[in-house]
Length: 253
Ligand code: SAH
Image (cartoon, rainbow, N blue to C red):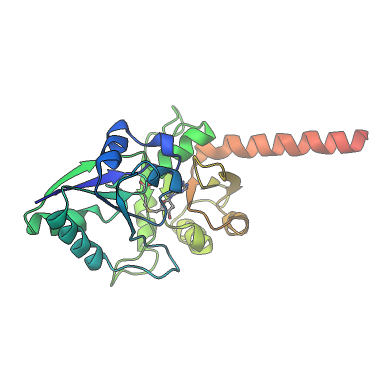
């Protein structure tokens, strides 16, 4: 009987993998990976059979139960099975379902942490999530609605948090802005969209909560985070400064 490793692939850049993750990829017989995992990361598993099991919103999704069964089957046939998950496996990654299914089948599981998108994005921005005097709390939140939940129930979780990081949310920016404002957040609260954090295609779009839907229209097809909080005011000031300098240059010309 083999062993299954749930491994964090980090936000995208292959050199943001942990050393442990890279070592396991090298040894892996099979790698089950999310659609989000970059080709450079998969290249670190030269001898493994690669199986894409990713779920992406709007695309054909492989049912979680099917993934669980595939992991169990693979562990019965191979010594080293890696389940590679974007970011950190323990954050919005359905890790618990996979751990439970493997435990039930009597298969050993080990989790290897990874750098979550929120940390990749914060490093890219150069802005601390817990900047002294502005943010003493951070909430990681997804608007994905559980069955039977009332709409906007997710927004309650943002209450009281200084900084809010929303995963799997960028394609519903309008509903996000509405939900947070209905919960008392002011439309002028600074926000930023970060797409493809840590990758060459990284994009940063500073905005405010009220203008979030407009800013989200500029996003491409990559994974993106919505981040909201006073700590992002600095990005708006920088953007305003750049605009002013440009206006002055144009006026002088
Ligand atoms: N376990 C992952 C999150 C999985 S949910 C982690 O810890 O990061 C998938 C969501 O993560 C995407 O919808 C997007 O909101 C976010 N995400 C993943 N990679 C990202 C990246 N490189 N840049 C910005 N957001 C990213």
